[in-house]
Amino acid sequence: MAVYFHKREVVVPGQLLADGRYRASDGTYDTEDGKVYSALVGLAELRGNTVKVVPLEGAYLPKEGDLVIGTITIVAGNNWKVDIGGPYLASLHANNALRRPYSDDISEYMDIGDVIVAEITAFDRRSGPFLSMKGRGLRKLEGGMLLEVSPAKIPRIIGRRGSMINMIKDHLRIQTIVGQNGRIWIKAKDTETLRLAIKAIRTVEEQAHTSKLTDRINNMLEEALSSRQSEAQSMSKEGEVKETAPTSSEEPVEAETPEVPESTSDSADEEGEDSTTEGSDETAEPKEPSEGGTEETAVAEDENQPAEIIDTEEVSEE
Image 1 (cartoon, one colour):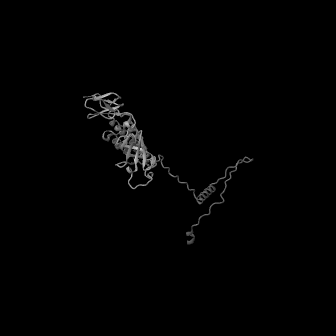
Image 2 (cartoon, one colour; image 1 turned 90 degrees about the vertical axis):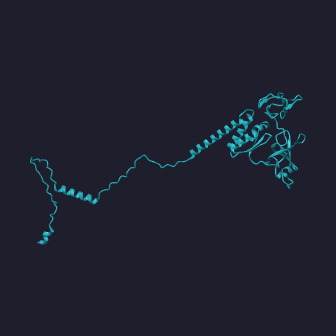
Image 3 (tube, helix red, strand yellow; image 1 turned 45 degrees about the horizontal axis):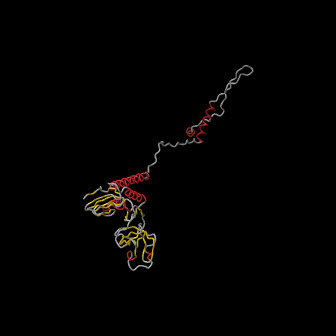
């Protein structure tokens, strides 16, 4: 017994993978001498004594029990024809989707263009796969968007026991349904989250053949979410309006008190006193000498001298 490949090694058609007591599985074939060969280009895996090859690319081949996402294309009688992305149109009978009694016009429940998630219950290459919607989570999908990837990469996107897709869902808090036929339904709370989910899934699809992919996707999502949180905090700080009281560097200027003009009576009294004083002290200026050569000095007498004040007490006593 011998194995001729490493874990998740890329192999090509016709490459010897193992011989001895090993059983051939998906993507492989065996010969009478007990040797197992690869039937396609893909990643070789060994689980127990079973050898399988996960294709890197390829069309979807329906299998019983697969969960698929499809679009209704035809409504005929009590049947819907559903496009599931493979070489066959799937059939869904009303009895496998509705509770009785139901209307004769089944387009009232699901019509052309509606997207559904269903399970393949049987597959015949001559008639195509048959679907059922009687199961947990099987229903018509509302809202969200469909992302198509290579069906061969679906096992890597799901991860072991759902580890990869559950990690993406937990980080981004989104709703997802992964179909084995290479269609993924995503419903996110906003456009930025949806874009980040698509980026993560596309990265898994492109790097499906590499190791430690789960850790890299986890780090990528944590960095992206941390960056978004920092941007949101900076924007909220910029949006805050701080109210401050206006301050002035100039000193207050005291109002000038207007000068009150003196009363007319006071000014008149002062003028009267001045005129009286000037009249009592007035002296005649010297005249120029006359032709006779004598100088005459004229002294002006004040004819308007004030009257003498009489003491009223003395008058009364007399």
